[in-house]
Image 1 (tube, helix red, strand yellow):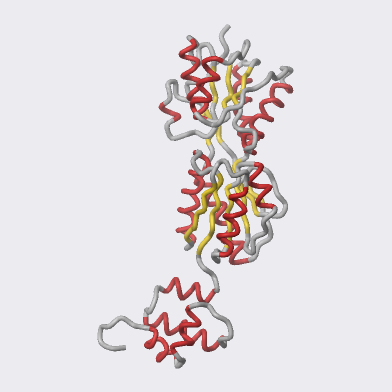
Image 2 (cartoon, rainbow, N blue to C red; image 1 turned 180 degrees about the horizontal axis):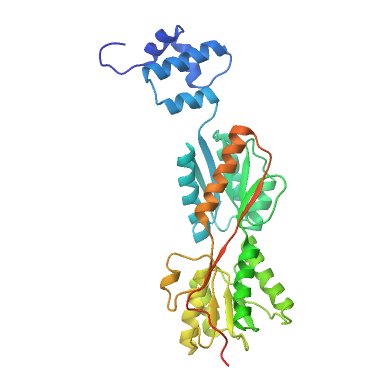
Length: 335
């Protein structure tokens, strides 16, 4: 090389003993290059520091070092937290993620578009955060050419899957209320196109039935505090002494609505949420809830994806246990 000038493609070609066009073809991962010539070029790239060694490794392994992430409804706490966890775990594993966000009102079509776009872009694997039934159905209709992992609570034999155990979490919430002595427990469900909402609502029904109580109709919210507020303020929940809300935001709204109605939490009505938002401990009263460990979820998902990329592992399914966090929004029912 010449003095302190930065190395260029001709320096690499000279050191490797090939033409500069051969170096260009290696850089663009084109075929019809002998293995020995390709290796000499990669060695020359490393020695001249023509480009970062991570790129040279990617050329050598024929991998992009990128994982595509398609996220459905990323504005909700769960999907948004999962994306952040995936980004952190990917950096530790030596990968970066390329996200593709899908809107709420596309009926699952955006999942198909996102998988196709990222697959065509040459990612090494795909992670799909698919909380809705429609999004998973769309994914099944669109086959990707790379390993696919789905983050959602329903098992699927054809894809890698990780999830927090939704049924176990909902059972923890119901058992906590039943152990306190509550028998009439109302539920604010999330949108029932969401697998998580379906699982939590199903466990609520099953737990009451097992306790000898007939479940009554349940209102369906949209995950927002506003929908929880309307329930707490105006819904006729009969003689219920406790409310199991399908997420913390609806629980927050319910507490506000109950207060405006003249009911005290937990003196008159106990309230349990789901998620353990960072602010849940600062609700008035601090909220009893089910904690989902999204950091562990992202780390586990990335470990399965890296294993699928590097070792060609067969589809695997892993579940993370949730945790009951007892705070001041629950107590024994009024006498």
